[in-house]
Image (cartoon, rainbow, N blue to C red; front, side):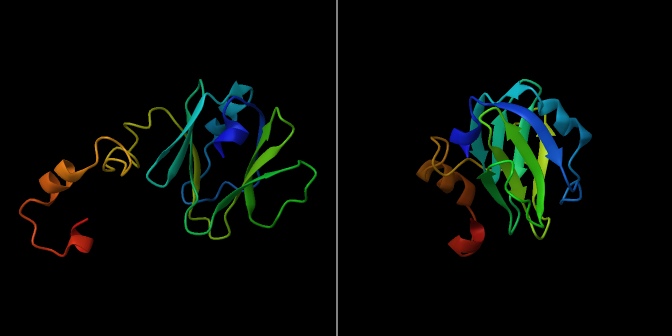
Amino acid sequence: MSPHLVGHTIREVIVRHRGLRWPVPDTIHELEGQRVLEGARRGKYLLFKTQPGTLMIHLGMSGALRVSDPDTPWRKHDHVALQLDSGKQLRFHDPRRFGCVLLIDDPSTHPLLAELGPEPLSDDFGAAYLQRELKGKTANIKQAI
Protein backbone atom coordinates (compact mmCIF):
# COMPACT_ATOMS: atom_id res chain seq x y z
CA MET A 1 0.00 0.00 0.00
CA SER A 2 2.89 2.38 0.60
CA PRO A 3 3.42 3.23 -3.09
CA HIS A 4 -0.24 4.25 -3.35
CA LEU A 5 -0.13 6.46 -0.22
CA VAL A 6 3.35 7.71 0.62
CA GLY A 7 3.99 11.08 -0.99
CA HIS A 8 0.32 11.56 -1.84
CA THR A 9 -2.15 13.96 -0.27
CA ILE A 10 -5.40 12.73 1.24
CA ARG A 11 -8.08 14.94 -0.29
CA GLU A 12 -11.04 13.49 1.62
CA VAL A 13 -11.82 10.82 4.19
CA ILE A 14 -15.14 9.05 3.64
CA VAL A 15 -16.52 7.06 6.57
CA ARG A 16 -19.52 4.91 5.67
CA HIS A 17 -19.54 2.83 8.86
CA ARG A 18 -17.77 3.79 12.10
CA GLY A 19 -18.54 0.56 13.94
CA LEU A 20 -15.32 -1.39 13.57
CA ARG A 21 -13.45 -3.12 16.41
CA TRP A 22 -12.84 0.38 17.79
CA PRO A 23 -15.06 3.11 16.34
CA VAL A 24 -13.46 5.22 13.63
CA PRO A 25 -12.82 8.52 15.44
CA ASP A 26 -14.09 11.87 14.17
CA THR A 27 -10.46 13.02 14.29
CA ILE A 28 -9.83 10.88 11.20
CA HIS A 29 -10.96 13.88 9.14
CA GLU A 30 -7.81 15.74 10.30
CA LEU A 31 -6.08 13.71 7.57
CA GLU A 32 -7.87 15.70 4.88
CA GLY A 33 -5.39 17.89 3.02
CA GLN A 34 -2.42 16.09 4.58
CA ARG A 35 0.46 14.46 2.74
CA VAL A 36 1.42 10.93 3.77
CA LEU A 37 5.07 11.24 4.78
CA GLU A 38 6.05 7.60 5.31
CA GLY A 39 4.66 4.12 5.69
CA ALA A 40 5.67 1.34 8.07
CA ARG A 41 4.43 -1.83 9.69
CA ARG A 42 4.43 -2.74 13.37
CA GLY A 43 3.23 -6.25 14.05
CA LYS A 44 0.00 -6.57 12.08
CA TYR A 45 -0.61 -2.82 12.08
CA LEU A 46 -0.01 -0.62 9.04
CA LEU A 47 1.22 2.85 9.97
CA PHE A 48 1.13 5.92 7.73
CA LYS A 49 2.71 9.06 9.18
CA THR A 50 1.18 12.47 8.47
CA GLN A 51 1.61 15.90 10.06
CA PRO A 52 -1.36 15.64 12.48
CA GLY A 53 -0.60 12.05 13.48
CA THR A 54 -0.28 8.48 12.28
CA LEU A 55 -3.00 6.63 10.43
CA MET A 56 -3.09 3.16 11.98
CA ILE A 57 -4.87 0.36 10.13
CA HIS A 58 -5.37 -3.24 11.22
CA LEU A 59 -7.10 -5.60 8.80
CA GLY A 60 -8.53 -7.84 11.51
CA MET A 61 -9.38 -11.36 10.42
CA SER A 62 -11.00 -10.66 7.07
CA GLY A 63 -10.17 -7.07 6.18
CA ALA A 64 -8.55 -5.81 3.00
CA LEU A 65 -7.33 -2.58 1.45
CA ARG A 66 -8.12 -1.93 -2.20
CA VAL A 67 -7.03 0.83 -4.52
CA SER A 68 -9.90 1.71 -6.80
CA ASP A 69 -11.38 4.40 -8.98
CA PRO A 70 -13.85 6.65 -7.12
CA ASP A 71 -16.63 5.65 -9.51
CA THR A 72 -16.22 1.94 -8.70
CA PRO A 73 -19.37 0.83 -6.86
CA TRP A 74 -18.92 0.45 -3.13
CA ARG A 75 -19.07 -3.11 -1.85
CA LYS A 76 -21.28 -3.98 1.08
CA HIS A 77 -18.46 -4.00 3.64
CA ASP A 78 -16.41 -1.06 2.38
CA HIS A 79 -16.34 1.07 5.54
CA VAL A 80 -13.72 3.80 5.03
CA ALA A 81 -12.12 5.37 1.96
CA LEU A 82 -9.29 7.83 1.48
CA GLN A 83 -9.65 9.97 -1.64
CA LEU A 84 -6.11 10.65 -2.85
CA ASP A 85 -4.62 13.39 -5.02
CA SER A 86 -3.75 10.66 -7.54
CA GLY A 87 -7.45 10.39 -8.33
CA LYS A 88 -7.64 6.94 -6.72
CA GLN A 89 -9.38 5.82 -3.54
CA LEU A 90 -7.95 3.52 -0.91
CA ARG A 91 -10.89 1.55 0.51
CA PHE A 92 -10.93 -0.39 3.76
CA HIS A 93 -13.14 -3.49 3.42
CA ASP A 94 -13.92 -5.62 6.50
CA PRO A 95 -16.92 -7.98 6.54
CA ARG A 96 -16.40 -9.06 10.17
CA ARG A 97 -15.48 -5.57 11.46
CA PHE A 98 -12.55 -6.85 13.54
CA GLY A 99 -10.14 -4.37 11.97
CA CYS A 100 -9.51 -0.75 12.83
CA VAL A 101 -8.81 2.60 11.23
CA LEU A 102 -7.50 5.08 13.81
CA LEU A 103 -5.58 8.34 13.92
CA ILE A 104 -3.02 8.14 16.72
CA ASP A 105 -0.36 10.49 18.09
CA ASP A 106 2.72 8.36 18.74
CA PRO A 107 2.95 4.71 17.65
CA SER A 108 5.72 3.99 20.16
CA THR A 109 3.46 4.82 23.12
CA HIS A 110 0.06 3.73 21.81
CA PRO A 111 -1.38 0.94 24.02
CA LEU A 112 -1.95 -1.41 21.07
CA LEU A 113 1.69 -1.14 19.97
CA ALA A 114 3.80 -0.27 23.01
CA GLU A 115 4.05 -3.81 24.39
CA LEU A 116 4.83 -5.58 21.12
CA GLY A 117 8.19 -7.31 20.91
CA PRO A 118 10.83 -6.45 18.33
CA GLU A 119 10.12 -6.89 14.64
CA PRO A 120 11.54 -10.24 13.46
CA LEU A 121 13.55 -8.63 10.64
CA SER A 122 14.95 -5.80 12.78
CA ASP A 123 18.43 -5.63 14.32
CA ASP A 124 16.80 -5.89 17.78
CA PHE A 125 15.66 -9.44 17.06
CA GLY A 126 18.14 -12.31 16.92
CA ALA A 127 19.66 -15.19 18.79
CA ALA A 128 20.72 -13.02 21.75
CA TYR A 129 17.20 -11.64 22.15
CA LEU A 130 15.66 -15.12 22.00
CA GLN A 131 18.19 -16.50 24.46
CA ARG A 132 17.50 -13.69 26.91
CA GLU A 133 13.70 -13.99 26.61
CA LEU A 134 13.59 -17.80 26.75
CA LYS A 135 16.06 -18.24 29.61
CA GLY A 136 14.49 -20.35 32.34
CA LYS A 137 11.42 -21.29 30.29
CA THR A 138 10.45 -24.95 30.18
CA ALA A 139 7.55 -24.75 27.72
CA ASN A 140 7.82 -26.01 24.17
CA ILE A 141 9.42 -23.44 21.88
CA LYS A 142 6.19 -22.83 19.94
CA GLN A 143 4.26 -21.94 23.09
CA ALA A 144 7.12 -19.92 24.57
CA ILE A 145 7.46 -17.72 21.51
